Image 1 (tube, each protein chain N blue to C red):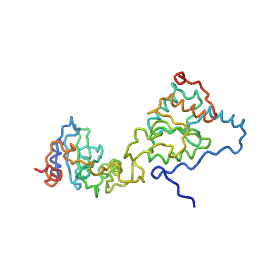
Image 2: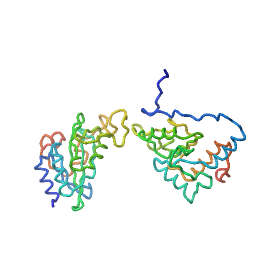
Image 3: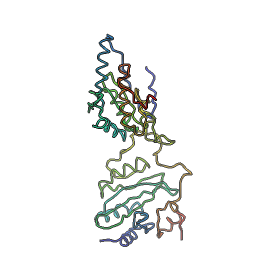
Image 4: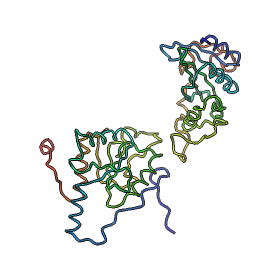
Length: 180
Length: 174
């Protein structure tokens, strides 16, 4: 018998599925597919708290996530490849987040958006009873976007970072402030 | 039409433990009363018949026990009213107001979540906001030593103690 699973957060189990390497790995073919994936990321329409408002802002005309190919927000995780965990993850919601992650077909990527989903943020204090302090305890996180909430520009940087993870390079020029 | 003074008379007849008058500009309510748990439903029924609605149910742990507050408001008359009940923290049971105000069901479930209150005859007393299997005691119950007596919580306004036992328990005996 397998040893009982260690539960990190009160009674909430970790995601069991993981992303396995491709069965047939033809490098030029996979590179081509990865490039296409990176330029057409489909995120999930999924918001838990105020960071989701910023996600809506970044998908609207002013910040226009469509410029980078990620505007097709899917209502079902089965059609999506990017899960943005936007905001406060309560212990009541956490099992649903784990289930959403497990339902996503691979390759799949997770962004922890905002301080709450990174570490519990402003709600991390002695005696708090309702929150998961960091969604990375339950599902693997690829990109962390700090902020309370993050600016829409930070969301765009997060998308760039996911593209970098998929293809191995950055595709967009860096803003001057970031270089200096 | 019942003014605040008539409500006070009403509650006195219903066996209130204490009656209070408040400054609505400062405290948000006009009059309030500590009632015995047995008089709660009949008093709420009278308020319901006079057009009052239940605003919320809140709880507070004091040295003497759990103070459960029911706030009422009306569209016809200015000023909110509050009914309060003191329950023992060891056996925190209260009758449910579901039969009078259906919406009380959710408020009671919330109070049950956070304070471990048991509302008898609530048809669906399952957790509303917290997960079903949250370990440990109800999260808003205080640890010993962090409790204040009712007289210091600012709940009583200009109080008139009717039940001497209640007054003595709250340190307000005449």
